[in-house]
Amino acid sequence: MADNSPGFATIARSAMSVFRKDWHSELRTRYAISALLMFVVTTISIIAFALGGESAPVDVLSGMLWVVIFFAAMSGLARTFVTEEERGTAMTLQLLAEPSAVLFGKLLFNLVLIVGVNTLTVALYTFFLDGFIVRSSGVFVVTILLGSIGLAAASTIIAAIIAKANTKGTLYPVLSFPILLPLLLTCINATRLATEGAFFSEASGEFQFLVSYIVVVVTASWLFFEYIWKD
Amino acid sequence: MKLFLLLWMSLIIILSIGLPMVPRPEFWYQFPIIPGLEDKARIMFFHVPTAWISAIAFLTSMWFGIRYLRKKDLNDDVKSSTAAALGLLFCILATVTGAIWAKFSWGTYWNWDPRQTSIFVLLLIYGAYFSLRSAIEVEEKRATLSAVYSVLAAVTMPFFLFIMPRIMAGLHPGSADDSNLGPVVSSGGMNITMRVVLYGSLVGFLVLYYWMWKLQVRTVALDSQRQP
Image (tube, rainbow over all chains, first blue to last red):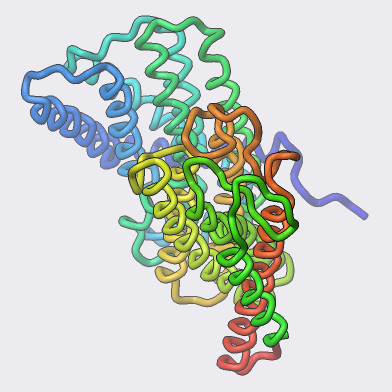
């Protein structure tokens, strides 16, 4: 029996096309990116004002960073699927691309988006909030990187789910929070370790967990995406 | 079966509340006194089974969700959502009995102990599951999306339910502060009479859960004129 399913190379090429389509579409209008950046600036300013010049303990600031990152993700990462539904292009995309290609293309897009946003968030956060001093930057960079990948992975599959529902906006954080909670707790812990100046080996437990979280979520997304995507 | 269930649960309730607690149990029908808890330890016979059932219900919901994805039989979706509804009920019961036990054992109803946090997250997952279901009108789509969500939650849940409370420091039995896995799971942790009553209670609650689930599935099937 002939094997009609496309090989890895075809899917990869397809995924890159989906990614490029979303990328160009976004650069053309720049709605999402500018809204996200303004969201980050606003949130960090609010935190700075709320602290009122006092400095909070660095543990609290480590946690707050991930609050900002989580809500920025909730603001911006659903767009890639929701706009397909809103613009009416979802059906066309279904016909043109394999489900895996759609998933990985949009996952890549969300990944690039969230890594960019998180870099800005971290920069602004460190700049505005004096109490937040990172002693082991290596641990911190790896935490942000792994955390962003995990965030993108979970957010993309949940975005695919809610894109088909009715009340998209408010449902997104509600569905994402329980799934993302293990990731957030681990990242907050690792950030705290980074501010205390821990070595790589001390944070390795956290990193192992983050890597396994990413693997588990991406695998589950890949296995079940087709059921969500196909009508 | 109803009569059997009634008799069994009545027996469990009578045994758990009625059997005397003495410092040195000599006869088979006596419980040992646990220092610090004394009579209030009897809540264990209701708290532990409801917590286990809420996890079992969640896994059942996921199981039928996957079956729906494979066969597209809407009866499987009914079974999945009923299991989730019962799971939510038992989860609320477990949380409340846990909070009551925490009050007289640790002094406060809630203190974000890892085990308490994990049952709270389970509540959040159930809440999210039902919010998702209420946001979709088309039956097949609703069934598909809630099945996928329950699988997604099921792959991230073991961390909360099984791993985190055991490796983190906390007040609940079986945490990193404890010397063993907690009196229920590890051997030699609990007096044999208590163990028997606890397992009996677990069986009773399981049968209760199964009966309620079967009843609701049949009711919904009859309501929608489908073949049960």
